[in-house]
Amino acid sequence: MVKNIVMKRTVTAILVILTAALGTLSGCKGTGTEKQPAPASRPAQSAADPATAVHDQIVRYNQLLSEGYKKGDVTRLQEVADPEQAQKVYYHMAALGEGKTRMVSELKKITFVETGISTPSKARVTTREIWDFAFVDFQSGKMKQEVKNYLYQVQYQLENRNGSWMITAIDATGEDRKEVPSWNQILNKR
Image (cartoon, rainbow, N blue to C red; front, side):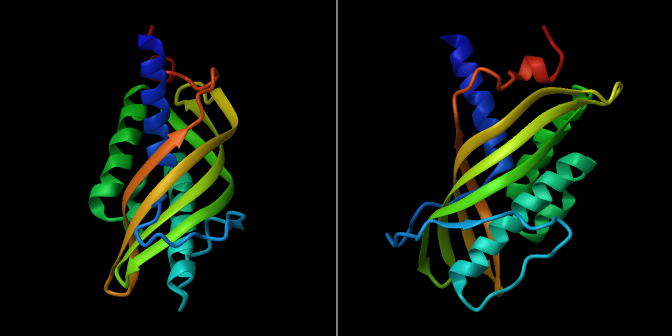
């Protein structure tokens, strides 16, 4: 029972860090738009259509997230997320670093399930995201605890600040799978 609770909390922590989604503030149902992740080097494109602009920011957030974990520097998340949201990711990355571990992740597919824009400055988006992730030992460089095709349901909240959509909150829920490592496994503790 306790192990299941710890596992679910671990999954939730990883989900919050890997993805972002917003549900619906306006009650408008999205079309289930799918996007393949673009290369991380491509900046997010602005769009006249608010829904497209919001979706682009979420895709860009996930690109920067994956890139940041790989490089050990998530500073660039502040391009698309407010400082408080970016700081949550930094704390997670720092905890991994204390365990001499870094995370490598890849967003394989993102589907925009629902998009609600309640006012010109507030949006909520729900996504379905499929990720591969693993943890790499700093000393040996060996990959461990690899998880493939992990499904996340993510809700992102965004605010339009001075013409740019910024992610202000993320709530993610992932699958309950045996191969998802616990914090003790990730940090090499017994």
